[in-house]
Structures are given as C-alpha cells and as structure tokens.
Image (cartoon, rainbow over all chains, first blue to last red):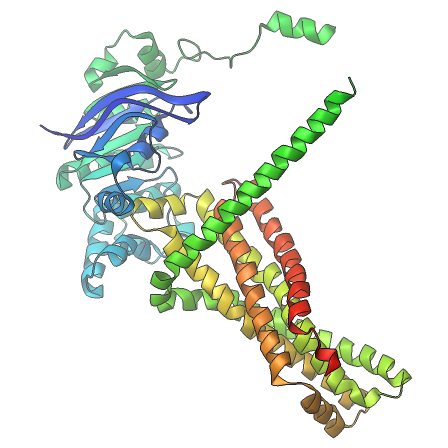
Length: 267
Length: 268
C-alpha cells in the first residue's frame, strides 16, 4: 500500500523563538482514516495547513501523492488542491449562498459541467449526507451538525483523493457527533479516499479511524491502532483517553512557584 | 534614569514607523495583486454587477436624501449671502459650481466610505474570521480574484455614478428652495448655471475626482477587510479604519487634485 501523505522530520514555527512543530514524521497510507490527536494549541491544525500548502515548513519534507508540497508553484499547488477536500472547524460555508450553491461552488469554478448535471451531482452529494431537503436553506438556518454535514458534502464535491478534517466533532451534540463520524468513515470507504482527521475527541475517533497519532508540544509522542491506543500504558495516552486533568500535560500553565508569587505580592 | 523613558519612547516611535511603512508596502503589493487578478474577475460580469448593486444601488437612498438636503441648505445659505451683494440671481451658478467641483464628489465619497466601504470591509473581514477565505483557497479558488477584485471594481464603478447623482439631487434641492420657495427667477437660475459651468474643466474634473476617490476608498475597504485580524474586535477595528482612512484620503486627495485641476481657472 503506497502512502497518500508523508511527513519526514518536519519542523515549523511562525517565528524562530516559538517552534510549533519539531521533527514530525508520519505516513498516511491510501484509503485509511487517520486521526491526529492532541490538546488545543499542540500544532495539529498546523500539520493540516502544511499538508494543504497553506503554510510552508522550515525544515523537512511534506509529500502529498508523491509531490513535495513546499516545492510546488502556485498553479501546481492549485492543481493539487483540486484533488483535496477540506472540512473546516465550523464548516466555513459561504454565508451569502444557499446550501445548494455552496456545494455547486467548486463544480462551477473548476468544471464546465452543465447546470442540469451540476444539479444532479449536488443533490447526490446532499443525499449522501442526508440533507437533500435542505438544499435551498441558507447556512444561517442550519444547526451546527447540519452545517458540518453540508461542509462535508462540499469537501467531497469534486471526488477528491484526500479529505482533511479540522476538528469535525467540535461543538456537536452526541447524535450529530455520531452521524458526522459515521459519514466520514462511510464516505472514505465508498469513495476510496484517504482521510486525515485533526481532533481531540478521543471516543468518537477510536470508533472510526484506522490509526492515530498523538501530538504534544509539537512532537509525536505516541501512535497506534485504536486497539493499541485503548490498551496503551503510555502516560500521555492514558491521560488523554481517560481525560485526567493532570499528568504529562500539566494542569498549570508554566509559572514561578505559588509561594514565590504570594511572597512577591506581600512585598 | 531619565534616559530610559526617552529611549522607550523613541523605540515605540521607531517600531510604529516600521509597522506603518511595512503595512503601506503590503497595501501597495496588494493593490498590484488586485489589478493582476482584475481581468479574470471582470470577465465574469455577473460577479462585478452584483457588487455594483451592493456598493452602488444600496447606497442610493443615502445619496439621494443627502444630496437633496445639502442642495437645499446651499440654496438657503447661498441666496442669503449672495443677496447681501445684490447677486441673488447667481444662485444657480453658485450651487452648480459648488456641487460639481467639490461637494458632489467629496460628500458622495464620504458617504460612500461610510456606507459601502464599511460594508465591504466588514464582509471580507467576517469571511476571513469564519475561514471562508481559507476554504476558498483550499478549493483552489483565489479569494483575490473571486472576492476582492469584484468588490474593488464594484466600488470603482459605483462611485462616479453616485457622485453624479448627488450633484443632480443637490441642484434639485437648491432649485426647490431658491426658485420655488424664495422666488429666484427660474430662467435666471438655470441660465446662469448653464452659462457658467463648462463641461471641461468642471464636469470632466468632477468625474476624474470621483473616480480617484472610488479607487482610494474601494482599495482601502478591500485591503482593511483582507488584512483584518480574524476576531470580532479585529473586524470592528478594520471597519472603523476604513471609514477614517477613507474619509481622510478623500479630503487629502481632493485638495491635491483641486490644486492641479483648477489652477488658473480664476484667471480666465
């Protein structure tokens, strides 16, 4: 099985003093659903942005479908992006368009398909996420879960080879969460695509993914299949899976000692 | 140490200057990029027409109402002052020149910056905040071509039309007050205006001014929206900057253009 995505010793920082990623290496095989997990601000969304070419790493190599993303020119990068779908954290639907127009948007921009054919394709995508009846609604009329499903339909509008999901479960009720999770798995298998999910929702991810990476402070600190993760004795993985407040990821933000702080206030 | 506050002050001034110059450089590069993407955007006529509707048609009410009231005040105050020197009959010329040369483009520009400019900035800023621009980029659609360029040209096209309409409504307001209410002779009102206003330099320069203001305000509006911090506070600050910078740019450009356009007109 060849890899859809390869990251080799990737380091990235917005400035030299604050590195976000430090030597990340990972391989994501074709056809798999892979989760990148970690706490807020650990750098997992940055990995998605490097894969999509929105950011460029300072060190190492990011390859998508064999192409080094950093070395692509604008046209080549756009050609690659046409084969990538992305679901943003809160959907990022175009608020001035209806649900139908949102999904038709990439088709109208990148193909010469007739209106009749686009209509059929859009309805097919909406049917796949169970929202054919919502085609004429505006994004403001949708619930959070519905918006996420519409964004999912838009992400697969051009039948991509790869779909990137940025926090697809954030802020969803339990039913919507299950629906979105199952849709990700079903669409991945039905369309034969590769999916990368950036999330901190460990329970939902363990149900649907083939492999997980745990990222903390810009490094991969654990990885494995869902079964390996469930049975892992690694303190970080245990803290994450069991939702412990304190552990390898400290409860307190770094600061000088409490006693010192109080003494300073008294002086 | 007394030198420390001084050094800190100088450091702040230096940092602020570097930030301002770097931002101006970014704005200049942004302008070039917008122009580069303009042919593709203009080829898709419905996109630009939609923005002409939002920037132009939706500004009609404020332009028409303001134009009428400004014209009525001009009529009233102008007649009062001119009549002191026995020149009340020149009201038509006075109002026409004031509106065509200055008030039409300037006041319409200020209103345009407040209504349409702020709306453009807020829309683009919110699209950035809600990741709609990023989503577009990830769909291999350049937001500069799809979002920014049509809004820029929508503003540039709308502005001269709004300025012309403002002047027409101003003349109408002055006519109502001067001729209908005060009793200036209608033939004198229109005749003086027709005799005293030249197509060139008056009307042509008025059009040039309004186009320049349209470019300036539209560029500021799209740039501030695109450069806004992606937070509620950031969009709010960007919208305010559009109105303030747009208004100041209009007033400064108006002075510069007036110096060049009407130099020597009084000697004729």
